[in-house]
Length: 256
Image 1 (cartoon, rainbow, N blue to C red):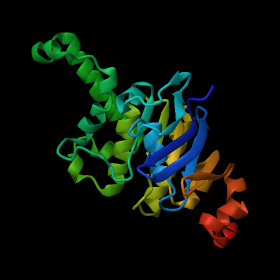
Image 2 (cartoon, helix red, strand yellow; image 1 turned 120 degrees about the horizontal axis):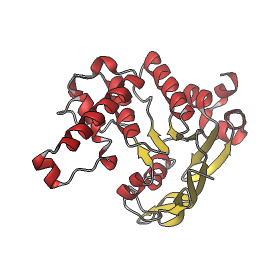
Image 3 (cartoon, one colour; image 1 turned 45 degrees about the vertical axis):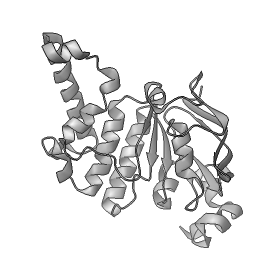
């Protein structure tokens, strides 16, 4: 059974069609990359897959549950996590507190508990803090446990946002250009992190322009062009598809 499935997704903004009839089926523990030129509809597609946009047509499912038109928080509760090309971090909070915020879906604390702070609430907060710290170590941010988020370098902020998304315990994680703006070492760290996430059984949708990263980590690749699916297959099949080479990769892809 698919963790996340989209059928014939379309999105129109006025008279402009940003996405036209795109489908995807994502299995647990796999990496499915979405590539294409700027303006091809990649981020629009991610926004449809997590409820930021409602589709103009098409349907989206988390497992067997249909979420078409549901708000973003319903997608989050259904196990769909998301990061952004520019990290959406609470810079005035600690790095650890940012990750703890990602666990809010799994924490139970009403107004009375917040005001009275019974013993179970203190234990729950301690457990949340410990789990957030463990996630930071898993994304190689152990040295920043006690730092303010605003003090972290850009590459670390990218991994911090991934840690916060993982704190929500997603079944599918949508990554929007996680390697954008990173150097070679930081990109390698993202590569290794994506592999570890998939190894945990989490399905990953990756939007990325770094073709070395895409071709190395992907189980499947979907190519978009002008809002439509141009090709889909394994990384090797897509890399050698003449239509993809002409529209996006360029002749140098064959020599990569």
